[in-house]
Length: 580
Image 1 (cartoon, rainbow, N blue to C red):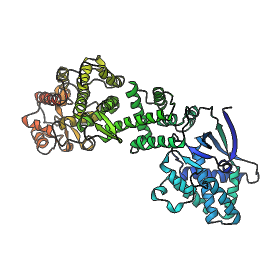
Image 2 (cartoon, rainbow, N blue to C red; image 1 turned 90 degrees about the vertical axis):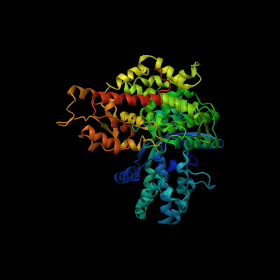
Image 3 (cartoon, helix red, strand yellow; image 1 turned 45 degrees about the vertical axis):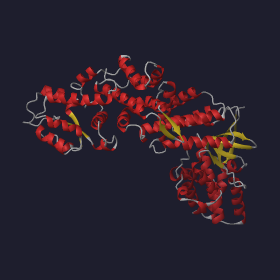
Image 4 (cartoon, rainbow, N blue to C red; image 1 turned 30 degrees about the vertical axis):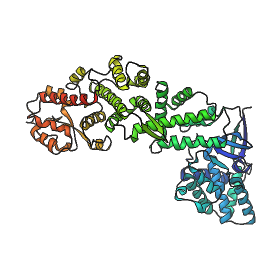
């Protein structure tokens, strides 16, 4: 049979044999909180003991544990598929019981119990402990707890969930008198789990995919990690597993440690990675991301293949992070800062281009052709900016952009990708096409930009402001402080701007020529133009406001003139081939 079951009390589960529990890398971290989870488990056990103190045959079940015995040479490990939180907490509880006997209730019998627990948690050769983590980040701390080497605990060790929970349990046990403490220990033999054993024929991937259905859904990155590290098609010894684990955690996963929502960002990366490789963007769904990755990778048949897969995702993840957050000295910050506005749309194309124009050495990205990379980035900026100005929908690009790089690679008419990209987007079907310069000239004097995506409009204004500047506005820090200013105010004060009709005010208010950036918006709104232009020119560090000094008044003709002036600056800087 593929599945066998048994039931054991939690002491027997840990101390019944010398088989080591192995927490694979694809498992989530140990997350139980001392008060919320550990105390609840202890309180529930004590309440059960009080309720059934006269019925010694009553048993208290705390759930199922799923394991799979795995042979590594002469050693058998018990791989934990489900139940990590309960197993880890039970081991910490036994460690605290051992130390309570050693330091508070020392007796011949208590010492024997403490020694028995210690031998089951920490094997005599000092190399093996009862609970092995494949994610090595906290393994050292756990080893110190199970081996009772508390004198070597560092500040970092004490900040781990393992040490905090151990200390919490130990403090709680030390408050019990000896009789209560020994009764509690006896009670643990009535606390049981159902342990489900999978044999070698059982696919733990399918089990892992289906567990926790009533709890927090597994992230796509969890499922992918499980797929990579179950080694179902080949044998992987400890040394090779350690190599893969270090590569995955230290080279790949560590790139995302600074993210507020690491799981979400890992899923975004994998979604982009799949799109780069397959030219198809899967849905934002953990299972869709997982199955998309699995379909692309196929069956992993050897250590070498797994190593190559993890190496590949590590290299692409480095490119992804550089593009999204870190930046690179050889990639123009103005181009990249703007493109991050629509990063989810263009990420696959940007990743593929960076990969084409660079290589990686010692986990560092080396740009091989800085000039051409920035040149093609400029053409993508022009594509996105022009579509925004012309009010073309962005949603339709989700299917198109992942296919673009392959189309460029297959186009042999030009030697460089810039020319290939411009040719493609100016001649593709209407929904994906870049608007012509003639269309843009009409759009800047007629399209309402303000009522759409204000954050994107801000970035467009920052892009315009940064043209030709050595010290550019920062797309993060400065953008938060900057405000969009209407030169002709949104609300016309009585007796001011009287030369404008209501119709003209409504028509031109939110068009490009009437919009600028300021860091002093509240003081400007009700000023007449002569006063406003002086403030914007003399007190503002926004250079695009210098154009205003040329105007004696600011009406419809001036709005249109300024719009075309800004458009010309944009075209001259970003439109590589002005043949649109």
